[in-house]
Amino acid sequence: MEFLHPEYLYLLLLIIPLSVWYVLRLSKTQASFKLASTSAFGGMKSDFRVYMRHLPFVLRMISVALIIVIIARPQSVNSWEETETQGIDIVLALDVSGSMLAQDLQPDRLQAAKKVASEFIADRPNDNIGLVIFAGESFTQCPLTTDHKILLNLLNEVEYEMIEDGTAIGLGLATSVNRLKDSQSESRVVILLTDGTNNRGQIAPLTAADLARSYGIRVYTVGVGTKGMALTPMNTPYGVRMQNMQVDIDEKTLTEIAAMTGGQYFRAQDTEGLRQVYDEIDEMEKYLISVQNVTRRKELFLPFALAALGLILLELLLRRTWLRSVP
Image (cartoon, rainbow, N blue to C red; front, side, top):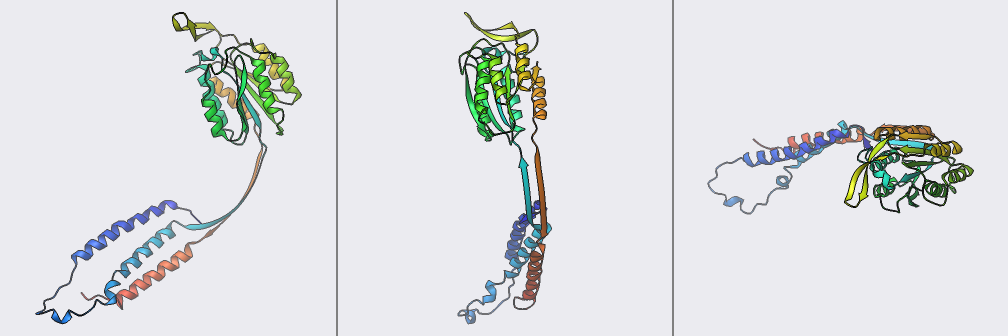
């Protein structure tokens, strides 16, 4: 059972002040008359009606409660739903090298990428999503999962210096492919985000792309960073200093990776641009959902209405007969 207007149930709180008013009124209205002596009543016991004198008020409060329940419209709901979904397996490959600390995206590239990736994950609740991070090496931060709470927690823990510095794009892509190669999903996707050029690892980016193509895995590549110079923290003999560094993204290789696998290359120069990239990928990788709903509602107010009417009639009957009070 559920209520069509459950907000009306708050009216049940009115019973509290009504009960307080009844108690206060009862304490102030006491009948009295003078007798020469009360000794004749010493052995008399209180009549049962004395204990039952509050029954009409109790019946009235129950009636009020039932009427409020009727106003809230109790209903029984029988629903049948059939949902057919075709989920997608996605691996997010995220560059965590030192250049991702550049501040052309706010607060920096890495934090902006994590934030937008979190929004992307939240918008796709039915997908299996995993997370691979790479710099000079690569490893799986989170395997494919539909438990997006755990995934988001692990994404939030990603920081610079988790692994050796460098940019091993090929290794990051190969690790992502390894997570997807045994997947039974009809659609398997890698979203690879980097801001640099491959300079580490034993696997060339195009070799990893060819591996992805052989497994039917589509790769979307994202180059993140403004064109020209970007303010980047650098280690110097005097500590960490902010310096303008040339943004060097191997767009040619990233474009080839996407073309080989049936994906697409995107360039994101600011946080909003990065968000738009993920929105475009989200639109291109939609899954079909077929839902059939049959809902039947049946009003259940009649038993409550009959009970309220019966209690009101019983109260009126008791007040005018057995529990009748003399002014």
